[in-house]
Structures are given as C-alpha cells and as structure tokens.
Length: 276
Ligand SMILES: N[C@H](CCC[C@H](N)C(=O)O)C(=O)O
Image (cartoon, rainbow, N blue to C red; front, side, top):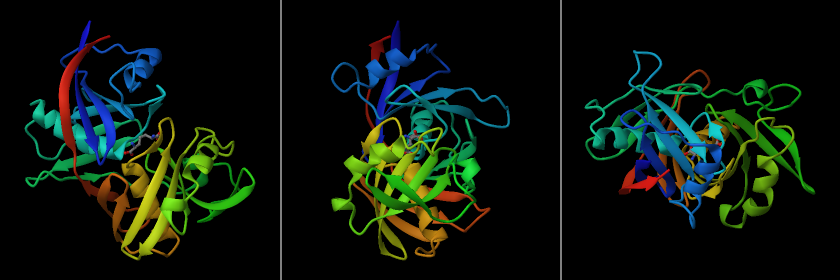
C-alpha cells in the first residue's frame, strides 16, 4: 500500500508529515523505525500524523512518533510544520487552528509573512506533573549524572524536559550527559535534556538531547522549557530569543499560569509516497 507524505523541517528538526484523514495509515512501531532510518527509509526525528479531532470544537488531532517508534505528547517545531501542512494540503482554510494533542489543545497561527506562532499551553512545573521523582517542587534539583552532579529545572510542555545551565553550549557535554539524563531513573517516562547558555536576560543559546531521537538541530518544546526554566531561575525576562543550531525561535512566557508562545519558521522540503 502507498503512503503519501511531506518531508518538512522546523529549524532543521525534521519530520515526515502524513495525512491520516484522507488516507488509511496503519504503521507498526517497527515500520515507523524503518521509515525513520536515514539509510533504509525516509529519515526523520519525528513522524507527525494528522487525524480528525475527537472533540468537534477542535480542528485536528495531532499524533507524534519519535524516531525510536515511541508515541509522545507534544512537539513544538512539529506544530509549526503541522499548520503549514494542513494549509498546503487544503485540509483547512483557517489561519489559526485548534489542534488536540495527547496532553491538551495547542493553537498554531500561520502569519502572512510565513512565520507561525503557536500557543503551546500552560507549562506544568510540579515534579509529579513532569513526571520527576523528587522531594518537593524546588526550582532546581541536583541530579547525579555519571560522575557529575548537575542542577536541573524540570518543566512539562506536555512532554517532559530537564534543563541545566552551561557556560558555553559549544563545549557542553551533550553527547556524554544527554543519554544519561534522558534515561535517568528519576524520570519514569524518560526526559528531553536541555543545555542552556544564558547570553543575556533576553537571549539564550540552546542544545537539546531529545528523548527518543538524540540531539536534534532544534527542539521547539525544549526552547519553551528552557525559557520557562530561565525565568523560574530569575535569569531571564518574559521575551527571549533562542538560538538553536538550526536557527532562531522567539519565546514569550508571562509566568506561572500563563501559556508559552513560540514563533518561528516551517519548511516543506519535498512530497512523496512510499510503500508501507
Ligand atoms: N523528543 C520529544 C518529542 C519531539 C519534541 C521536539 N522535536 C520539539 O520540537 O518539541 C519527546 O520525546 O518528548
């Protein structure tokens, strides 16, 4: 059976996007992993599946699968590609859409200049909500990682993030510490590991070792989580320019109880079809 797809990216975080409304998509975890393989398949950090909403008040449902085949709750760069995809595929003529995810509704808005702003919802900060095993809900927690101890701030954007501050992202031990944080036993559902360099109160540099995908060129929810963590730590103001290896995102957060707003680009690289 043929599967039509679009290959897209958000700042180099790359996706296969599939219309699951006008075509039947039955992908096993094994077939997902084959499609995600950059040598044997198409290659992607995540596969994004467009479905009809469960609640008629919303426009779409959005399912996200990591490169390792795991289904996850949220994807920020993917949300920008999602709204570009459903617009290009003429699945909607709305500029702002309501999209159901496994952990709440997000609202991507497609601007006339091609940039997309996404209301990513209210971040969750309590340890149990991440989930993270800890005594209480301090802003930072010491975490033993190999022979080191790092201070992490934990944030859920629907998916779990652990953010630490480093002096320079270029020399940060992302390859060494990233996998150890990702699979740390205090994160029962694993975690995305963010390494943040504070440039000034309105600017950071960020690298993220993603759960289920490894280090990516950019991570949208990771950028949101890093800004929330920096504001919680008292080191950032409410509007932050985030430099990732794949490019820049603008993130805004008004503090606890407020949603995080993310603005950035989305690119369609090619469309195709493949046997599944
Ligand atoms: N690896 C993430 C999902 C993709 C998030 C990232 N690609 C983004 O742009 O937010 C997780 O397992 O929670």
